Image (cartoon, rainbow, N blue to C red; front, side, top):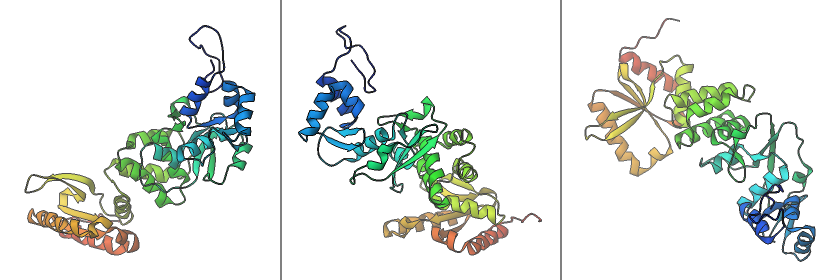
Length: 329
């Protein structure tokens, strides 16, 4: 019996290799009905393949890749087409692999495929059908066995997230990918550090390392990463992020940013804080912070980017009022 790569294996009856419908059905099931011509011929024979195509039961997707039905491609089938059309050793990467690994909310785009660096892009990818999204091919010298998992084959979540950040259109988009993956607990900062360490020539390597370090320090969202960067830029002491505290009713709370020594608390408000359902709860929580004797400042996340001078000036004034002294330059 032949496996999905066309290799001979035992068929359980001791009679050597065979072609049968069971093998063809199994490959079709495992690959969502998408096969290479070589797989189909190895499993069923060239005459059977030609017959299915001639009668319209099967559809030729592109050079060397078939669909064992004649309808439109579903999403899983599109992923299989991308991997099989890219040729031997190909696997899904970047945003595509991160999304398959459970990271939500990432910008949709072309299907990202990684191939070994010694290979050229296959001609099959130039003939993809109109019901397929674009396929973006990347070459890598670091496609070790530990990189690959799943069906269709894809990179690990940690590798996918670092690659997605490297390939992002902007620095902000790169930081969003890293923050989303860590915030959703799909990957640990330590795992991202390991991937970055193994890729010394990755694009945006310095930015990615700095962002991972900020995430490791407690930053959970892009607004908090912006806040850490703002403090660094304006010479303010680094706050503790996502600090745990217990309120007057014994409930567990997390502070966005807190300078424990000076008892200053800063909240960075995202869009959800504008919802009336959250507004009263936020006000009550703020009152409890004031009652406890802490100072509290609140800023909308857009203000951190749009008017950082004003934000930094107010934080500096609050820290100074609480006893902080700016170190001499």
